[in-house]
Length: 426
Image (tube, rainbow, N blue to C red; front, side, top):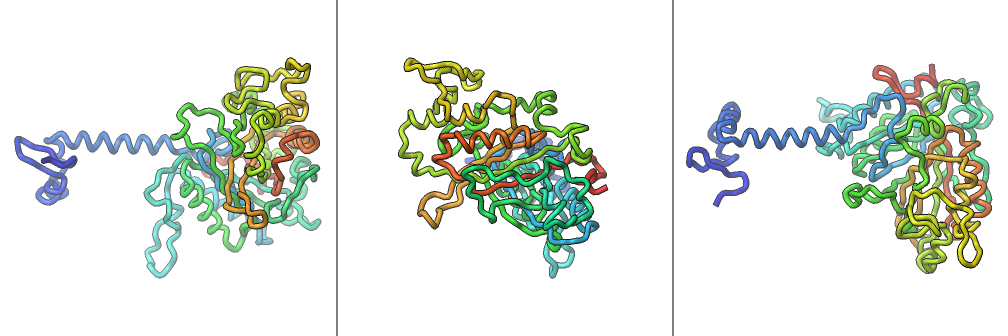
């Protein structure tokens, strides 16, 4: 009985093992070509190569990846504190990061194995053999990189934009220092968590002596394999999250909502964007004891379809004036959907991930929630007024607590031969 690797040539049984044994490397191609197996193997290799090419998102571009990129399955987000006081070392770090990020997004190691076995390898190796997995690496800088303790740290104070300031303290915030702020952020998103972690690990390794971890958070959403229809992801409360996002394929909408434009402020951030990060703990045990009607009134949407209450389609325009049989607004006044929408003039690009960090040792409940990330052109006119409304009136506040918060300016993309942050540091 032939194995899957066996075939026949002119009535003679051959196998891959026999080919390698009898033909040697030089003769393999001749035999495989004559048997027809060569074409089969070439086809398989071609498919693998083609598949891997499709999983590469180029690092060099007008805008950084990981902002309007189709959301990947996993995120590894880190906030860093800069430890060097020398601007030239900081500039070199961004140059080294740029070279490494370009290799990592192509599925390559950041460096070859050392020829000296008594030295550590340049790459940590845990992603060897894995595909690029649509890895994107996004870099941002926080307000404290410019000024900290009233000190102009790197001569960049005059370049700090009016929008790049610490977020105000919102009502009900319960922020913890361990999850707040940072000089630099790195957002690594990929369809494989090991690929994302490998990228962050090696970038932090490169930063040794110049920057150190401040806080880190992994996140996940439903995978592309489990949701071939590519529906709006659901959060841990079971509701769709991100329905009202602007169209990332519309250049007009992205320029209006996400990308910093000339004249908005310092020109070094043109084609970049502002990122707001919030680590939101969700009290899922309390939520699980809440009846469905109350859950839907809290969100202002049907859980099953994602449609606004009183309407039929998830993406239907909100009808905030529609009333039910009792004469009440179909979408409750204090619902999350109504409060986040406001008058519809403030829009942000949400790119959130769920997280689960085991057990909260203080309460014995799940330590789980939402790593909320959103990108925008002008935080003072977009995220901040939205969050002010939510903090005061959102019924969802009964089931959540904001534990972490940060704002970063995500730099414009780098050109081949240039580096991330070039517009800021030059």
